Length: 395
Ligand SMILES: *Cc1c(COP(=O)(O)O)cnc(C)c1O
Image 1 (cartoon, rainbow, N blue to C red):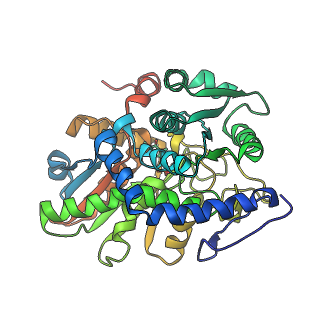
Image 2 (tube, protein in one colour; image 1 turned 90 degrees about the vertical axis):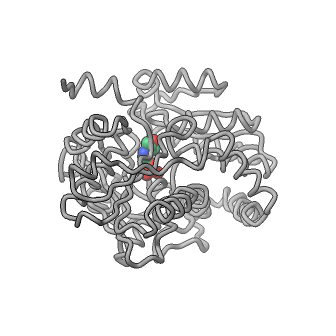
């Protein structure tokens, strides 16, 4: 990418738009179309109706009384795991599908690693009557068979990628290559608050419903704002969705749980806010896990939805201005929290969300008994059950 073009859409020095000259005009168009989409009351109503009747929003806020009693704080769970398809990703998948349709596009293009983003995108494409091409590494296709089957049932076209390591990185390359040829009729559906402007803002807008609901619900249930809000951070969409409503409430402490994986060394974790260095990845400026020479390092987490080597630009900014703190949770702590929430409350969380649960419990142990903690349960754990039983069985 020699010709880099950068416009507005910065969070401090992070974000922007670093793309091929060929796509620059298309992104101008996307930016303008999104402004119209966002300000069109009819369209926004249409999106809200879909969230209500198809996704099942508002998702509940649940007072976790067993956990609260055990750890000595008032712990509340925002239940994104109860959404249709079982996670928060459907919020932005449907938003982007509706946007693509309003732009007159006929297809969504996406890549997927573990398949969660692929399933959400395939679902949204089906609902909106769009074609859907999902690029996926050949190894991931074998590993993630249930999600591949789901996408096929939903009518998506799975395009196997056989280059390189045959996993997510090559799938991204191939999907971008296809998009560069097909952008006139297709929209690239992004999986988190990442990518070139305006995608980080657009995805945040679609996920901000989490925070809006959470704020209303907690005020109604307790008459107070929470002392702490907690979410896991992969690319950063479910967390930004929760955080966005509370940014101006100075007394609400904002915590992101970053995946420490197996340890602190490069390649052992996916904690880009903690260990990342500034650089440009996938069309935006951010903190990136990289080696001394600036090569992007492989990211690892037990939760495949968290193993991205970078993070949304707004998180970098929130960290810099100290509005949010990002704390490390390793694989074992996440697995313990997975069991803890299952056994105490009868809720099996996704391994991604288990990172937030683990951090929420740590905060609760330090908190006074009347302090309110809201933890975002970004998704349900059904997809992780086979893996857990095989690798971390417990009786
Ligand atoms: C994909 C995923 C995540 C991580 O993505 P963010 O953009 O950081 O929210 C977290 N939880 C679940 C359940 C996921 O599927």
